[in-house]
Length: 80
Image (cartoon, rainbow, N blue to C red):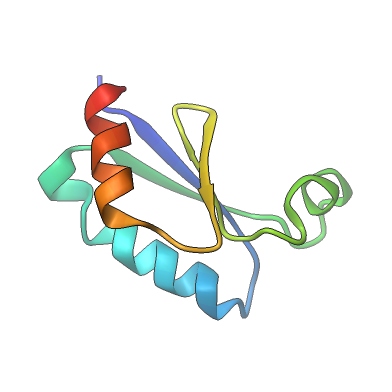
C-alpha cells in the first residue's frame, strides 16, 4: 500500500501552491498518494493549521509546514 501524503492548504496561498507542485512532481518517483485538503471555511482546520499552511502529513502524522524540504521528505517517506 502506498503512503498517503496530505497537504492542508488554502486558496491563494503561494507557499501552498509551491508545496503542492513539489510534491506532485515526486508522486510517481516515490510512489505515494497525494491528497490536498483546503482549510478554507472549516473552523476546525483553520484553528489547527491557519497560521502554518501548508501543513504536510505522511500517513496521518505531521511532517512539516510552510515549505517542503525535499531531502527531509524523501527520508521520512522511505521510513514510512
